[in-house]
Image (cartoon, rainbow, N blue to C red; front, side, top):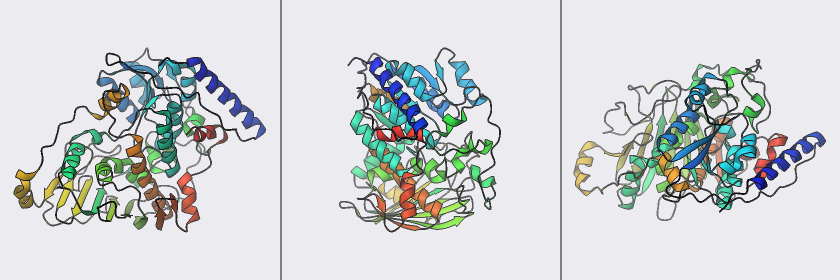
Length: 479
């Protein structure tokens, strides 16, 4: 399938002109059809031409991992702060790659040269980049969580089906040992009749240094000369720049991040959610909130999710614990809590060996399982039960590729992506529902069929979030 870069450029240029006209007139943009570009067929001998949006911190790590596979060419870099220390390191290593500070300009100039896009921006700005990329026939790798709101995940799933592109969310453990073990044990009937899951992430987080008696967002400060603050804000309502909003601190604030649940939930609960077919809960209850306030995440949270019966599987209660003083109860025979080398340290702080490793405890009618985060495998507890069952456990296949190679091979039609939006979208929506319960500090009932809360208008409004700024609304009509 040949590219038609001129039609894409015309589309984007016309979209920009319509945006400017609407901004001046105050009119709402009319719905616009995309050129329905098809993904380029990439031969097995070819490399994937990869553009990268968000190149500092985690975004830069993603780029290096994708490049290390030997399966891609880096063809464009985009970041709203191209002169910052956290982006300069990557730029210095790849000085010949074209650079942009606005993904819209990148696509306008280079769409015909791009096969796929990595999105390593903050949580709240995943959506516009991803949506535009898919509408132009580009495969997308998006760091977890998939989106910042429930509706954004819904639209991204719809668009992935519409545009026929390869998608992958960046919960890299979904291509490691835990993924293949959980799948094999579920298929063999070792993991069955799960009635309860405890998930826990009890390490220090960035917002633990803030005063929970805060009465307003931090006051605006001068914008660094290298930062395009307006583009950094993406579709979110305008607020003045403050250093507490950038460089990873955005994770702390409801306006921008998803807290510990959105940050680590995808690394802890991904396999349970997929292979137990949990779907969406019917009830979400904030059982404990220390330091609750309207602006940033609680110091400690306990959130209960109720998932109803599914097929032949019983109802399941999932309880999430975060906060350094909010450890979950552990069953008899749990064993030691030594540091698991497979679990990376959080962005701020280190794993604390004296506490529980981030992970989960899975309770079925017959067995109890202990597991960590990311690629860490499950073990049956207590140990004497594990020894008794050792000879009956199925063989677990090895991974054919890691998460990054899996995505690029899928772009070439050689594998199926393991965390496509059809899998990652509902998982991310569970986290969005949990964050709404955190924010409102309440118990909520949810209708998974209608995808609405029952009897809570404020919670319903948070499913969509605030109205996007005028020149960003067009991205929400591309699905």
